[in-house]
Amino acid sequence: MKSIDVISKTTKPVTKADWLKLLKQLNLASEELLIVYTDLKSFDYVIGGAQTIIEAIYEVAGYHTTIIMPAHSINQTCPTFFDESLPKKWKSTIYKHTPAFDSEVSPILAGDVSETFARNRNVCRSEHPIASYLASGRKADWFMANHQLQSMFGENSPLQKLYAQDAKILCLGVDYTQLTALHLAEYLANCRTKTTHEAVILENGKRALVEFEDLALDSSQFNELGAAYEQITNVQKYSVGGGSCFLLDYRSLIDFATDYLKLN
Image (cartoon, rainbow, N blue to C red):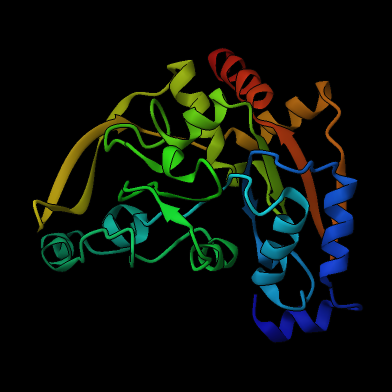
């Protein structure tokens, strides 16, 4: 959404005080282990934009708590998969010249808040060329380590570690289709076939196009799944600047999603 469109639909700018109030309404606790999903386009004009939201989260959750956000670079490292409009005859040329994934500089697909978060001090990024994540806090290095190529969202991924550590999911202006955390349930449910993925990476310091097997993921059921989950749980939703926000229990959601996908 263009800036002029955001301004035209805004009656009152959203301040950091509004975000702090929201996070307290959601009962976000200090030192809460978090994965955060945000879509800034869902909100009215936010004074300070992404930086304001990040500062509010830190002020409530604490500057030393572990906070994780998606990064993702499939548009950069696997362009012909991400954009099906690209002519097939271009594929060999595109992959011959596509830059290799570099966790220090590769673009972030997951939006303005993740991109701003990545520039904060002491934020590290996992090394997966398609499904990388960002983390800050005491356990950031552990969460980002050993993100294996053949397990984008499954075993040993940051998502699996979050499940084991009983984290919370902070949802700011997003729906369930945007929660990549739910992909973990696809692995646990064993409900997807495998497919061949491609990405451009650095191997021994040299650029290389690699192929690897992983699940053929599908988020088309996620909103339906989320609605079913909300029918049996007490998900409290609050609004700030026109955007819906809620806090979820990670393990509870993934357990429900796993059973749901097995049956549907």
